Length: 255
Image (cartoon, rainbow, N blue to C red; front, side):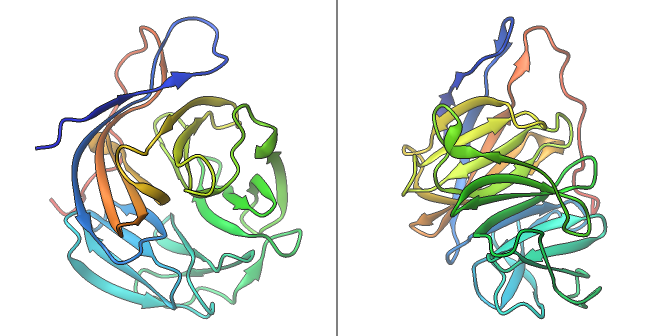
């Protein structure tokens, strides 16, 4: 049983707060996981590893199915409603069913080429992306039209090599991992992009690439390219002091 606990620093919040907390609960090997999202329908993780296919695995890493798309590779993956949104890492996206059937042709995000490392869907239905060349956090509408953008190099500390992103539906908070070429850490933001917290992940692994949240059990998954593994955590987000416990989010619908 893993018992390592990480408490992190918080930034620029008025009033006392409960800081982000991570407690490692397990880990398993998986071949080069690059992008993750949790699927409550299957109680599993969708994983992209920069190849032509994405794979659905159980929370223990056992494969359930594979899908492909019209993209030349699948770099980023997110649940969008009852289907999947896939990204090629260069600003190209495609929607497919969970069986891999295309729901339309690939389309480009506004602004042309972008080194899109991670994608997520927020409560407004917007596509939220992280990019590391140039370094940006961006919000797009469902058709890929740019709505807002943040230069992550202007943060303190800067976010230089953002890779994966996950959004907690209970708070709207965005969790973003910065890889080995950056700070090898986890950043927590509000839904509007205010930096709340940063935590080094070096004690758990190197080169974090993907991240996913299972809100129904306060569980967090981080994919590390170094060692090709996924590490699981019990997770508590940053909250105002005295805030009531978060209500459960989406959890396993199979049971």
